[in-house]
Image (tube, rainbow, N blue to C red; front, side, top):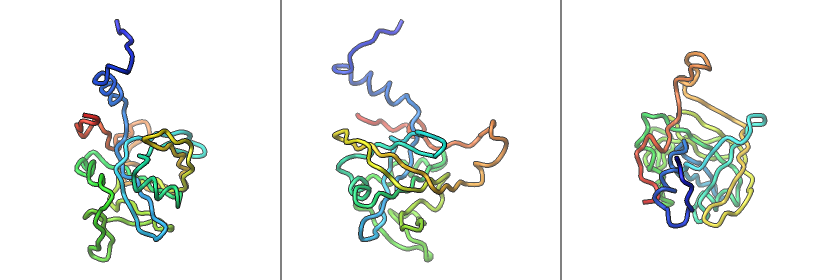
Length: 182
């Protein structure tokens, strides 16, 4: 029988139960007022509605992504494939190096494309959502955003087989074996 205990004083149990919830691990794209693109790893994203397509995301309050969204509320969300585990922590710093490779922009050494507003997304993403963002609530350490999806892209493997087979899925935090919170 499970016994309920308070969250306070039971941090290890709380952390492990929390991270047992399936959460995606993706890359949030934002753009500054000056047009400089930024990518940040994000795991706190969940579908909110299918029609219209809306996601909910929790973004760290002191992050560059939060500052960019506050001034220019546009986003991309690159979903990673299971084979892209290495990208699970590729975009955790705010001062990522920008460059060019074969006439394609790069951020942190990874090739990126941009939507019509200049918001970057990974060229080889498993899937991409793109649209506008609306702030919902300041949660202290994080800010909650409603992401309205206007554009979508997906790797060909996503459409293989029937919808019920859906044999292709995005990378999740569990797949990386990262130890969040400790």
